[in-house]
Image 1 (cartoon, rainbow over the protein chains, first blue to last red):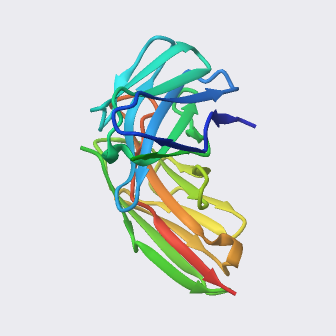
Image 2 (cartoon, each protein chain N blue to C red; image 1 turned 180 degrees about the vertical axis):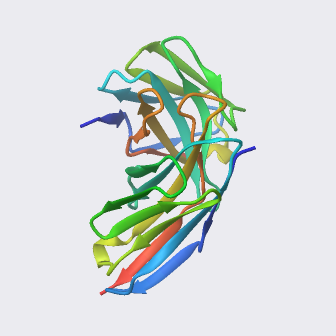
Image 3 (cartoon, rainbow over the protein chains, first blue to last red; image 1 turned 90 degrees about the vertical axis):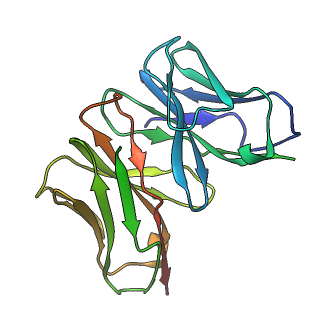
Length: 111
Length: 112
């Protein structure tokens, strides 16, 4: 069974802090994704990666960056956290065009 | 731009009362349509993939169907444990490998 693990379930950060969200998958998947989920807006794609050191912007990349130094790990970075980045963040991975497998999410609150 | 619209936003059923959830989509060329289930505080869990109009998939009380414009998730004789948010997503033939566009979800509540 595919396992996608997000390092924190809950995070509380202050405005202006640099925030790292970590995601690890154990199935050697080439594709990894970061989504955010907000009530009334659904899941929106922030960034994705097809391979190590590769990244592509999703639909809402502003205010975020990513890092993929190893195949199994995909990090989402908030350079200077703002209150409008309070959200549920979901990491996912997949192989080829097969379905995405999601982690259980990190609920980030920026105060 | 790919678009997915799910309706209704919320649905309340009595246990045993069958119903259907709708997913309408617009995509340049459909590679696949996906249904996920999401429980509160958890990530989405994969249910089905449909690839072409006329295709159907079943799992326990759930059956997913696909036409050229929409998909339905039929729930037969639901139980309280079927309560969850159901998400629909599409993957286009063109564009990024594996990238999915999601609808906003349908929150299903099944009363005992």
